[in-house]
Image (cartoon, rainbow, N blue to C red; front, side, top):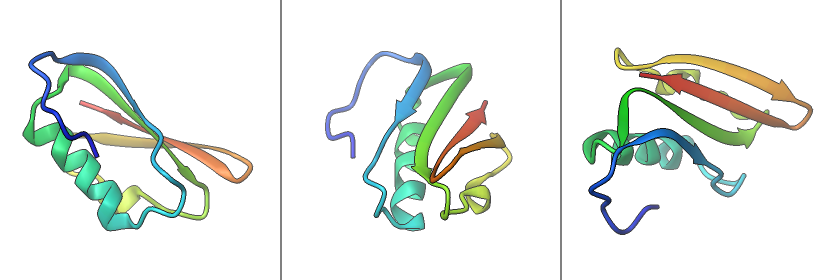
Length: 80
């Protein structure tokens, strides 16, 4: 997790947590970024994860999810 708040907002945030993270841990990453407003309006959050893990349940009204699979690795894109 990101321990130190940033006063900056970012156009693109790339998260590459350990592959053994649970759905709840991925949700915590997203919630942390939203709560702290680190992603600029119209920004993109990219999360790398194991393809076996389905992150579609983590979408909400703020994001549209697109996932691209590359073998055992997937990238989920959240567009604000």
